[in-house]
Structure formats: structure tokens, C-alpha cells
Length: 471
Image (cartoon, rainbow, N blue to C red; front, side, top):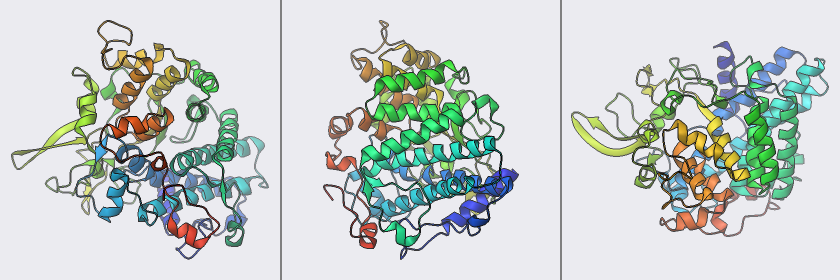
């Protein structure tokens, strides 16, 4: 609990960072006013916690990867969501404007997160700490930086590549780097992380990155770049490490007390029941927009019929993942919504259920499905289907009429196995399926809409920053 409370205090300070008049890269968190005095392991542990705390923003249920992967895909819609309605609906409608306030918010959050990693990397080099600790800290920061830049390059394409803390004046000289250069840095960071991080079994503090987490993320990067050979090699190392396994049943993955299981590869930690701790917000945010349970649900990522119907009729994962609706004073209201992060016993304070559910950024089923994608072998896909007690790809009972090829089978399996876990849009982009799949379902998607616009305020601050085509 002490560790999580430290994170909460620091993330609150990070949220109070610079105003809009500062350069877009000059996002020094208030939590680091004494960064020049980093000397001891305790100093660096606080800074490392601040870097991990940025996960609470990026993977917030209304964060960047939620809007991208669910709202811009065929998985989800929004009902009565709070905030600026037009800006939020622009994601669903593929009508994003350069003035969209959320696009700028997400841009700021990523660069604040990257600054938190960069300041630790910068200061650890000259610190009087042992070499093993230094390597471990650097590896964790490179993992986080690689994760954030991987998101950013998929969202915006070319982005300013910053690997050291910058002054406001220095930041004006940093323009957008080509995607190839950003990916080179991501690979460099994750290769270092995979080499220096411990195995999952040696991690003593829940939530810290492991060797397997870096390898799994690197494998996804290679897949995104079309390098299936390298992806298969690194993902097979995760498979052969014997650090991970599928849980016996899909339902075993979920619940407010289910944390850091053998299936979890990288997991964000939450502590429910205390308003001063980082409690989980997925339950409330994904609940329909009403208050009959004593709190207002957010109405975010309400499940489409299309996603619900993607599940095979006898797939037990459907009812574990999605509710058909809810009862309000004895009346059933039909509205499908996600239930993986439900915590009905959560303490309520100030209209907020202080839920305890963690969130898995990477899990072993994802690794197995990527392995089948990388090497064209259905063996790993079929491990996932066997856990769900469904016919294997290649068996007579498999729904071959709908998913005739292994590629289509993997696409189907990823959508159902990882539903509302912030994967769908990135998956479709990676396999060049976003335009045909989403166009057929009425989305106004085009080639230029596969990237978000650079926020207009960024270009106002620095006119040398170019805009993406189509905006």
C-alpha cells in the first residue's frame, strides 16, 4: 500500500504540470523540482514510481488507447459521456479536428510520461548506486518509454523523438522524426530492457516490468513493422521461458481480487477501497450512464451488437465479457456493456466506487495469438481456443465458413479473447485490415484517417511542426 500511495502522490503532482503557454515538450512535472539532487536509491525509487504512475493516465478507461482502439473500431460506442460531447464523438465518427481538446490532452500526457522516464535515465548515469541497480532502473524506464512511443507512432505517425530532458528553448529545435527513426528507438529501448530486466518469477514488486514484458512488447513491435521472423523469435522466447501459462478458465482472469496471475505479462496495479489510493475506474466508467447503483456510470465503451455477435454462440467468453443490460427498479434496460472489471462490493465515496481491479496491458493469450500471427502456426491459437472449450482451427467443427484462413481466424480470436482490452484498432491497422473491415461497417475511414491530427496548439507553439495529411 505504501508503494501505491507514493505513486498516487506523484501522479497528482504530474497532473499539475505546465500550462498551455509553455513549449509542448517542456513538460517538467512538478514532482521533480529537485531532480538535480537525485542521489540515493530512495530518491530514484520515488522517480521510478512517478514514471510508472503515468500508466494511470495513458491506460485510463477514457485514455488515448481506449478511444483509439475501441471507439475508432467496431467494438464500442458511447452513451451520454461527460465532457465536450463533440470532441469525444469525433473519434467514433472519424471526424477528428486539429482543435480537438482530447487529442491535445493525450499528446501532453505522453510527453509528460516520457519526460518522467527521461529524467530518471539522465540522472541515473551519474548516480552513486551499484551497477546492477542502475541497469535495472534504466531497463524499466526504457520499457516504459518504448511502450509510450509505440503508442504514439501508431496514433500520430512521425512524432518528435525526445530521449533526454529538454529546456523550453531546446524543445523548439525538436521537430517530428520519421516513423522509421521512432521505431528504431523503440526497438533499441526494448532490446536493452529485455536484456537487463529480470524474469517475472524474480520480480519482487508487483507491477514492475519484466524480461517477458519487454520481449512480448518487442514482438508486437516487430509484427507491426512486418518483420514476422524477428517477432516469432522473440515471442518464442517468451513461450519457452516457462514464466507464463493460461489460467484454467477465462472467468478466472477477472475479478477485483485477481491480480498478477501466471497469465499476466504486464499489469497496472490499483488499490481499491481508499479514496486517497489509485483505485480502478474501469467499472464505473464502463457502466451505463445511470445512477441507480448509487453512482453515475460513465457510459464509455458500450458494446456494439457487432462485437457481441462476433462471439460464437457457445463461447463462454461472451457472457464473462459483456452484460446484455441492467435492471433499474425492476425494469430491464437493454444496453450491452463490458463487465470484466466489475467490482460490485467496492466502497463508494463521493459518488465513486473505489474499485480494486487491475488492468493487464499484456497477457499470455495475446502472446500466443501473436505467435500464430508471426509464424503461421495455428498451434498457439488453438491453445487459446482449447481454454475456451471451442473447436480448434482446422477441426471439422471450426466455423471455417466465416474464418476460412488462419489470418481471419486470428483476427476473430483476438477480437473475442481481448475484447475491450484496447487492442482492436491497432490490430486492424497492423494487418492492413482497418479500411476494408471498418468501411464495411459504415465508418468514414480513409487512409489519412489512420493517423490522428497533430494538435493545432502544438503547431501554434512551433510553426515548424508539420501536420499529418488530410487535416
